[in-house]
Length: 330
Figure 1: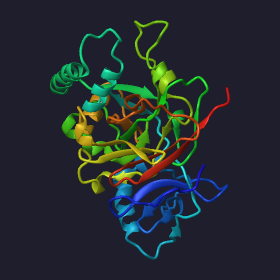
Figure 2: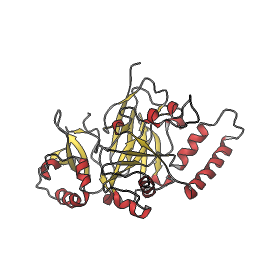
Figure 3: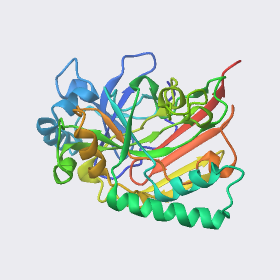
């Protein structure tokens, strides 16, 4: 695990994280502006406490977190020098695909067959019409990711030797607190504890099965290598995020801005995604609902990830992550 690589900049009076002193056991942490942290395992008097355990008792714990954050006499310690992990270990990861209008248009244009008679402008216009109809009449597209792909916000990301086209996809992630099963769109927001940052790395070359095209997409291979989901650094409570449907999602590659889009461009909003996933699955405390990635991925730029690349991802009010790519020896 890497030490914190950026300041604890987030909206609201506090956030949650998972930290440790070097070579020590990780602990759930209350993080406040000024880069100070409080060990919640000690402060809450629960020797087995984890961030997920705190989320499992969110209704009772949230008022206590507010009180602790406002108490200057607590056993606060500096963030500097502590190791930062993914803020929660989810049991389930729900991933939304094709959920940003411009992103889908860009991907469709990039994957046009060579003999497509349409101009780029004609193709974009037709796909835009499809996206508008989809937002109005269709359902979200949600699939399942593996928790084992989750890694910390400052950890190196190993690019597997078999990955021919590794790509970035920075996303807003909702973190579930109250279990959700068959909840309505109107009820869904009440089941969200807060929000964090996820980079949903994808090997574009293995998204579609080449040997059995009728099967379609292969999300296991393309998205679930170890470390392919850098997460965090913090979970910012939903009450501190004024409007999750209007946050800026920004990813820089080696200092150059590649993604810079508002969550306004989502086809399906966060509550609708949570509600839709809950119609089939039971969402549990600590689970993640990734909301899709905006335009500006590597396929759009014609520049995929390679060893030595550094990705810096930020979302308004949620802090920032920084990860370095390492090429696996073939």
